[in-house]
Length: 149
Image (tube, rainbow, N blue to C red; front, side, top):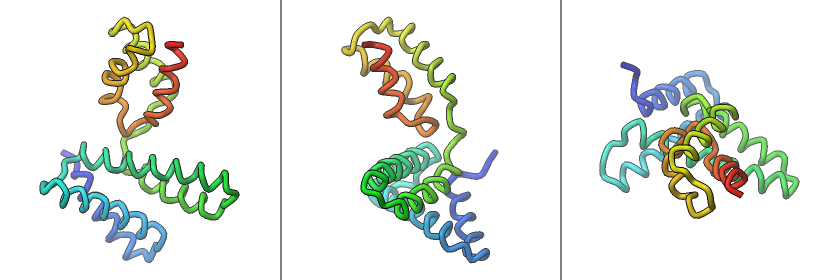
């Protein structure tokens, strides 16, 4: 059995401290702080699925920040967010390819018999457990909307 995700992150923090890798250490500490906060809020130790959901949320925040920094012409801050996002994504499962996402959407459309925007919730409900943490859910939502339109 593989090591739990949280233990792997803690081990990476120790390695970053030993290697004196300040940028990586800062990001890993940020991740651990988010996990710890969630554990305090829920009063329970998080499993890998819950940790992955937190990591997914952190990546989404970075994506949003990058967009805003790029729009404001702050490439220095956008680059910092990209670096943080790269470190966080190392802990997420392998990302789905565009073809795999397309296949998931087609499968969900066929299974639900969806034909209009009213069926959007059903489709997202089927896809989310399979794609969470492995793809940008906003992108998937946009692709589904274009298929239903």
